Amino acid sequence: MTPQATGDTLRGAVSLRHLSKAFTLNGQPLPVLRNLSLDIRAGESLAIVGPSGCGKTTLLRMLAGLEAADSGQVVIDGRPVAGVGTERAVIYQEPRLLPWLTVLENVAFGLEVRGIARSVAQDRARRHIRLVGLSDFENAWPRQLSGGMAQRVGIARALTVQPEILLLDEPLGALDAMTKLTMQEELARIWREENVTMILVTHDLEEAIFLADRVLVLSADGTPPALIPVDLPRPRDRNGADFVRMRRMLMGRFGLH
Ligand SMILES: Nc1ncnc2c1ncn2[C@@H]1O[C@H](COP(=O)(O)OP(=O)(O)OP(=O)(O)O)[C@@H](O)[C@H]1O
Ligand SMILES: [Mg+2]
Image (cartoon, rainbow, N blue to C red; front, side, top):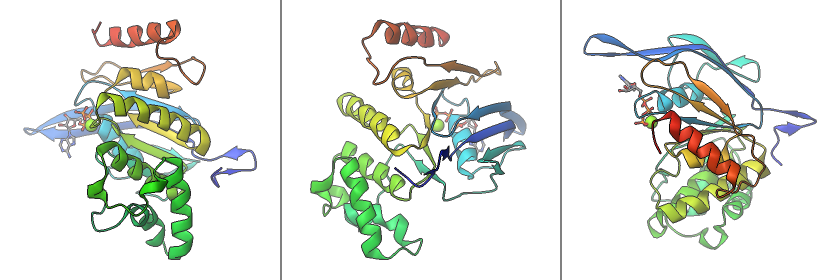
């Protein structure tokens, strides 16, 4: 259990309030998000899907506090976000490990830079390295890891700082199909065990249905976003009739079969 689960108030609730964002392209405004409002429960798993260029990464960067909205607010546990914060951790498509540090040192690094003593930081790091199944590789260097292992180290590193909210931008997008399925199972387990709010950008509609409580569908043409609840029991069965039906429905929204 992470500290945000104190008493019975779980932390990590996110509200998007009338968020709008436009970039400028060839001197013309390029609207990306238009007046998006959404409440995400503490501990919820939300997937964000939509065509390339629809604004998924932009939205995630706004949640991370790396990008400012033109108007509207991101509110976390009642406080408006003004920049990056320690209650949020971001996981990208590539793990971004420091090549000169071992697995253990990479995972402990985020705590050490916050002034936590090395021995304490490494003890905490070990717990999360175990959680992602890499205890035997604590002393390995990043270059000795496979892509999936490196990404698991990145996940452990994000969890070690005990965030309330995990923001993931296509975290499994660079992995081969088999590793990806295994990692989806791991993310489902980690989300359950760690009580974090998980906001996951993915291109993979099946991954969205496998992991999310709700799927936010963004469009690139100005069609208002849709929010689709995934009312399927967990752990989810990709071959179950309801799962298959849900996948077909979601693919249909994108004109896919
Ligand atoms: N810093 C920026 N300056 C100008 N335009 C930008 C900037 N960042 C993103 N954009 C534009 O905003 C739109 C949304 O980009 P974003 O990266 O959020 O899309 P995405 O949904 O994550 O796409 P993908 O699925 O390909 O990752 C795109 O048209 C992109 O060109
Ligand atoms: Mg993106």
